[in-house]
Image (tube, rainbow, N blue to C red; front, top):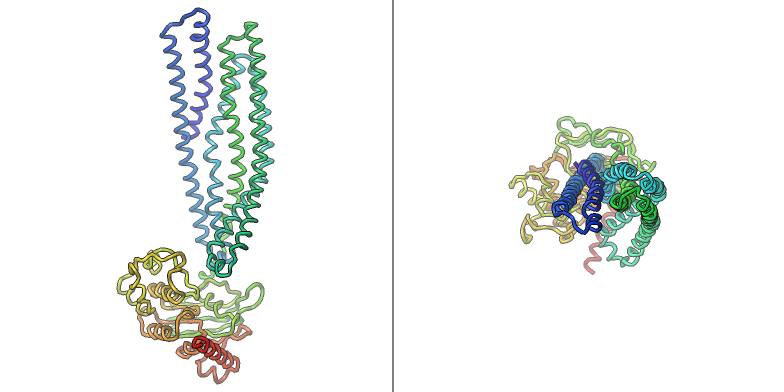
Length: 553
């Protein structure tokens, strides 16, 4: 539709020169030569120009309407494709990439990639206009037509040279735009850290360097475009002057009429603006190409195998079964030959020094960490997880808990009770209270309990806790652990723990040593048999006593 309407626009533009010729030859010249002209002839001339103008205007409206619908329809489709490709990739793929860069590719680059679609129909009309005009010019008068059409190859050469010159600058500008979007997003996400450590000036300087690079790239594009615009302005103007001189001579010799000369110059004048827009079309091609390349880099990237697909179903009576698990990071082994069998209904604690692989083991069980060898099985229904750093969306409390799922009122109330999260009901609008960005209106302990409620309402048979109660005071932590033990919302709890009081309440303890190997037993048996475990628990006790003394002081 847009291309067809553009063709109508082009034909009417070329046809308007015929209307001007008719008016000059039948109205203007007779009026000067004979002193009068028939009223009907004047009305006819006016009608010719008005009808051509109305049809031409309709072509513009239809072209822009459908070109816009095409542009943003494709933008929606491409944006959805990028979003779907992001959603299909596992967590480890996202962890290896900057969130800001992914956001830039899904927004700024998608918009850039479709910009050319809005101008392509107009570009097609210009090409048609050039062909029709060239034929019309040569048909009207070969000499004047040749003088006009000789300019076209010069403009086409200028377009090609311009495109090749500006491509690399547009690529650089698009890369800098993506880099700036990434840096700004990171700065906004870390605004609390920036302010606490007084790094506003340093962050401003970092962003200033990036914006300066973007500015320089845009200036280089502007310089090339300015040179090209100068040629588009100068060449047609000089050609018009040449045609005026040649045309005056042709009129004086009687080879063409005044109307034919004016129509030729009028048509050439009409071509100047479209020819300028040919440059605009050519300038948008490298812009869109740069955006499209960055979009396809992520949209066409092969899907990384999802570790969750390798997790099998545990036998009846077993919650988690791990056999010969080996995990490495950056080529260095983290877990080596870990064997683990967790019976349903068990409370298991994972204990070990910093860097021993506690969170890695938990991540492997939940399916977000790829494993090098071994097998993992989880009870039917899977697992739910609560991370140490609880992520809170800026939506309502209910949305943060349910994440769009229908959750019964009884299940929701039980989950709030188990997590000792009654404070949620005491907020200004209860569960409909809108939380600030990343839950800034909540304390660390409140965010952890909110995240625990979110995991509990899933009613997964296995609940994974990655040091989830680290921000809770000991009394609240014991209440939560006690509630978990007698709740029907969860069957088995596997928790990374660092507090001796928490570890002592576990049915089974898995101790991860510095060598990446695991030792399983009860808290009491490990204290008796493992020197490393005994020293670790003693260190935990010393830290707890030091913190308590600091609080009292």
